[in-house]
Image 1 (cartoon, rainbow, N blue to C red):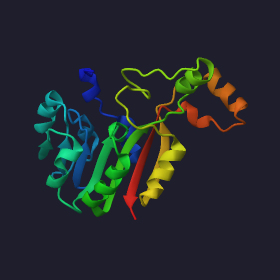
Image 2: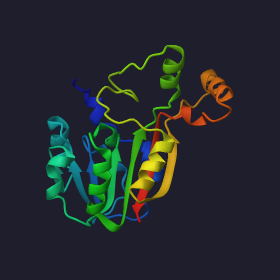
Image 3: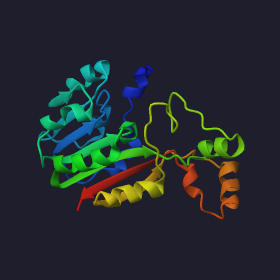
Length: 213
């Protein structure tokens, strides 16, 4: 499946609150055209590395980065310096990985001792997904969104927290992002049905900021 150009141009302003205060060496995995870098602090000493397998997006990102790898993470991991990056960014990337557990162990070796890992993951308990599952008895894969047909892994807020703890990260922040921003009857109905335990269903994604223990 070919993705639209807009897929690689997303800057993700909603993840600004998850950025740590201090960082100079940055690695973004699945950086697209590198538009997220416009949201980073402006510092002449900022060093940006990117990894992007899409050829067209990588061409654009290369002009903005100090180092750009046109490949998947697994294909260039040996070329990344150990204990080096103050900030690693994974916006809508980990759910595409065949082995996210292996990734979490590998990326810790590339992070500086005081480094941070930020990013976002889709929430499979998002209310349109729950509605389709409960009322339509369906789990339809789509070209984009939580049930993107290229997603290999699925998460809830609870399973994200467990995963981060299992890999011995400190959870600095984990919070829902991209809610509908207006009242949805189904969210209310779901919370009544599930005794108030489904407020997380209003979030399409979760943002996170982690540090090494």
